[in-house]
Amino acid sequence: MERSLRGARVATYVYFVLCGTLMGAWVVHIPAVEERVGVSHATLGGLLVLLGLGAFAGMQVAGPLTDRLGARVVVPAGGVLCGVTLVLPGLARGPWTLAGSLLVFGFCNGCLDVSMNAHAVHVEKAYGRPVMSGFHATFSVGGVLAALVAAGATSVGLRPAATLAAVGAVGVVIALASARALMPAASAADSTDSADSTDAAEEAHASPAAARRGTAGRVRLLAVLALMVMLCEGAANDWSALHLKDVLDAPAGTAAFAYGTFAAAMTAGRLLADRFVARFGSLAILRHGAATAAVGITLVALGPWMWAAFVGWALFGLGLSGCVPQLFSAAGHADPAAAGANVSRVAGLGYVGMLAGPGVIGWLTHLVALDHAFLLLTLLCVTTAVGAGVLRTESGRTPRSEMAGVGH
Image (cartoon, rainbow, N blue to C red):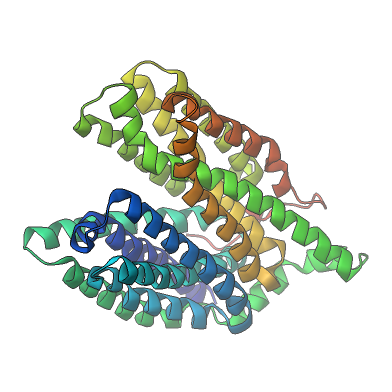
């Protein structure tokens, strides 16, 4: 059992890296595809919304399917579909074909994203200790791999379609080869049933309808927190470099390091977060992480010096790093029998926040300066810190992060 569980954990890492690599391969080719199709920045921005809408739809479909069919079926299927459709944007010859390509690719990416997160919940439950943040860290590693592959392909003169096709083909092979190591539906159910025996005993006194209402309300609160946290992350992705360039008059090369600082701090934080969750609990990580992020973005908004901006973006990334994994994990553990559906609700609304973040900040710049617009992110982080109590279990039992589990 221990060996198969280790295999399932490794396979989950593989799928997170795969998802990050496939999405990253598209992201790094956006300028080349934009030039090939011949659309403006404004038109491309509208088309990218379709990618998000497709992902949102895919999450809502794949979540319940994962609960019904099991991750061993849905996760590889999502990986294969994502790999196959990756080439489509590279083949697009006009705005309409690019729009359709992004919608389809986004749908398949959403299927892979939510199903692998649902499987990660079951793996974490079986381990009896936090492992979710580590999975999310490897997603970032996939983005780095995609950038390296794209740089190498460009240097030898490969067209975007050829590079995307090659990366997608490798992705299909990896998705199929890793499928056998995933936990079958029966194993996932057994692990959650045994770990939740205390829950069942406690809820025996409550009506099923009341229990479902309580779970649904908690998942909605988690989704709202995910919306706020991922809105902050989306804003940092698009506005961090522009802040240094436009507000602090940094050279373009120096300004690019603002996003690099944020991303590096977030990746490092996720690599370390599971150990801190095991020691202090997920509630503390969410609360103190959001508070740290609030301090960081406030320093960015009000600090007049370049060094303060870099420190602020680092604190912002470090603080946010552990927040999303805790919210996804809590959603999956709220009702293990519906882990996929609950994760899809939280991830879906969070994804809306990720897409909305750049636009919200952009709209605010019509009213206030860019640096002062970031104070909205401060407010969202403070609200998240205050609302972190939703992670507290009502029964007061020992949280899963403090349970003994399988060793490394």
